[in-house]
Image (cartoon, rainbow, N blue to C red; front, side, top):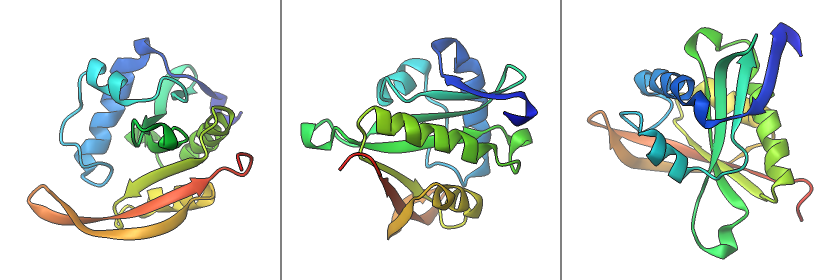
Length: 165
C-alpha cells in the first residue's frame, strides 16, 4: 500500500486513538449526531464484534471503521450501520476509500447483505466517499433531529452486497 498504509483489525488497545479521531469528527458537527464520545464499554457494546477495522499509517492509527446492528431481530442480522472516521490531519488523501472498501469486503465475508449510513447533506466528502464504494441514496429524512439547536436532515444511503443474494 502507498504511504505505508495498512488496514488491520481494530483492537481494544486502539481505543485512545479511536476516541481522539471520533472527537475530531464530533467537533465538525457534520459527522454524527453524537455530542460526546461514549466510554469504551458503551462504544464496544454498540458495535458488532466483527468488521472493526483500523487504518494505520506507519503503524499509527489514522482512521477506523466499525458496524452497528440496526436491530436485534434475527431477520435484520445481515443489516448494519457504518461508522467510519479519518483523523483530521489525514483527510482528503483518499484514505477513507481504502478503509471503506476493506470494510465492505469484511462485511460481505461476515454475511452482511446491507450496509447503511445516515449522512448530513452538507457532508459532501462523506457522500462522495460512500457513492464511490457503491452506496446509493434511499431517501431524505427531513428534520429528523435537533442538533446543536437546529433541525438537521440526513440522507439515508445503502449498499447491497454483490455476493449475498
